[in-house]
Image (cartoon, rainbow, N blue to C red; front, side):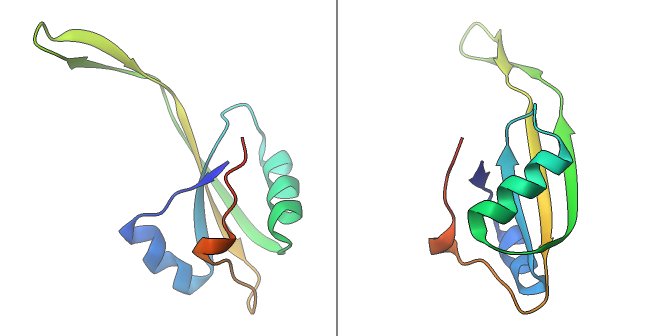
Length: 92
């Protein structure tokens, strides 16, 4: 699991919402228990998004290059709790 830090996710942090890139095989209940244990916060909501594997054409010969599948999770933390960028831990 690694935090997804973009302009949008930085703005969402003010609303106690944080985004992470996670392994595609984990379920919502597994993600919830891992994130709560890792950061010591109570999660209210957990939304997941999956991106299917893609094939992009790159290089001089425009050969297809595989792009792996992704799973993104957006969590909402209980009011009064928060995560800081220095608190993020990249765990696979």
